[in-house]
Length: 72
Image 1: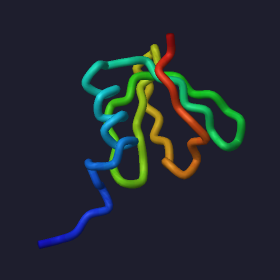
Image 2: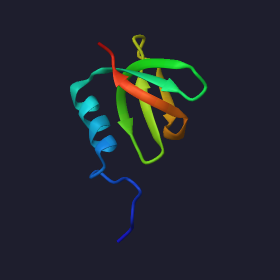
Image 3: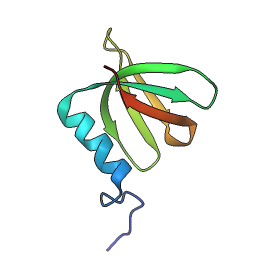
Image 4: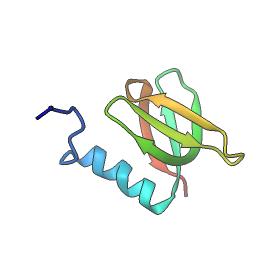
């Protein structure tokens, strides 16, 4: 049996999964200072993929994220 780094017991993993299910628009602040906004399509142990209002997909390395929050 293979081991995985994708631990669904972690609160941050569950939070992103809930945002995916809700199709919520999320703001991602990157460590570079850039701000990306979109709906989260998927996540894996290293990345998150979002789609902006034009349905353009961007894959973000999790280590590049300073924080994220649902857009109100």
